[in-house]
Image 1: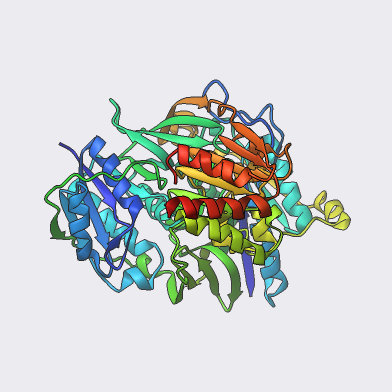
Image 2: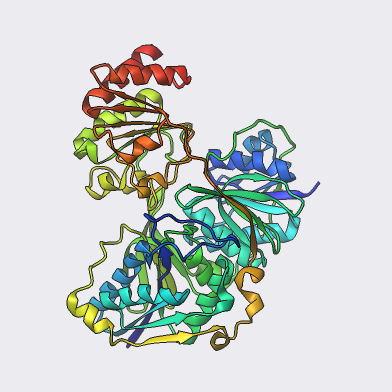
Length: 320
Length: 262
């Protein structure tokens, strides 16, 4: 069976959920071989094996943290040359897409970004993409070279599928190009304790109707009652009420959770582009004409300052 | 010292229009108004700011690859204050994918001459966001991408890249490829004077032969990816809408419980 390379997104050995989703998709096409780089790479092996990795290729070097993107491209290129895979899968993070693009060029392959599903096909893997603000669905193949495909978080279920997960050292030698862009400082984001926006099963978002940074506390309270991530519309972010890292929409994050709750968000195309593929959509808005109501499974026309706290209390009491 | 900046821009179908596909599964550009991709305005703005903050002799060239109408995007950038423009247009480019586009852009950038390339973070139609990384790879220069702050001094570009896990300070020597986010600073509106001046600024037209690119390296046939189908997403089935009469939050909780979210 052909091998499929899966690039591992991890933090000091803790594998992030989208990588486990990639393993689920990789098993549809072949045998997953994981590539884990940087500090803690070897510690990823147990989790990856549990989810289907037959092999875990690891390499650590200071370059991965000290220089931008290119060292990871060169390591992944070394892995492609060592394995000759049927495809390479990478998570659709900002960095993941950059790594995948440069890899594709180096190995003479086409690239597909932001797939939301993947299946085996007669002429190689077929990716489903959601385009034009999720108003169209396309099926796309890479027609030249080894398919390099980036996949959005929440595109597949995480499945247990125990495999050997044998750790092998990957041999990597960096070129001059690897050290072109130096990372001279790094300030980790403060953890909010909430799930990562793009990975969360439930997202609670606030928009213009929230009307002030201090009022986001009621959005956060609802999110916390549901174990959800917090999102914000562009209007709320531009007004300075909530950080840009939480922005949902065309110029922010694109999310596809099981449940999306929009509070005080009208639902402009820019916002819909980032949340339209959510499984269940719920909205609370004062304006019965708000376009967001065209998308919802359930909508409440009302003042979010009444509805949201009542919902939060109800969730808490039902959860006991 | 002089500093040659090339800003790559894209002419895209208006996102608020009814975007759809043509019969050959390429983007239909005939029935939807086009415009300069909003995210590229931030790239033009940063180029202008770098120029304004520099003692060097800075020349800003805006570059686009696209059909005849794409000149509108160039005019907008020129009216914001860019100095000149290059339009790569060729019938054989129809259907070119991202790998092919990066080839055309890279060849044009090399032919134009550059110290710094500035791109937006992504186009508002394709939204892949990989062209800056591809350009850095093709041009063989450092990639300093997704910056929300950028500065150029003494042949070095510095910037801040805000990622999900951390905010990073980056640094590279010129020549380099930079991309900027929509957090880099509001783009200016063209002034009346700027709009008038833009009409007199030079727009060069190049085709594939000017760039020594063979027709089979680009276009639909030369694409590295193939679109097998494109289907309109089925409209979401109409949901239940209730008016809050004092119990709206509880009704919503009931719905969520029914869907097993609580």
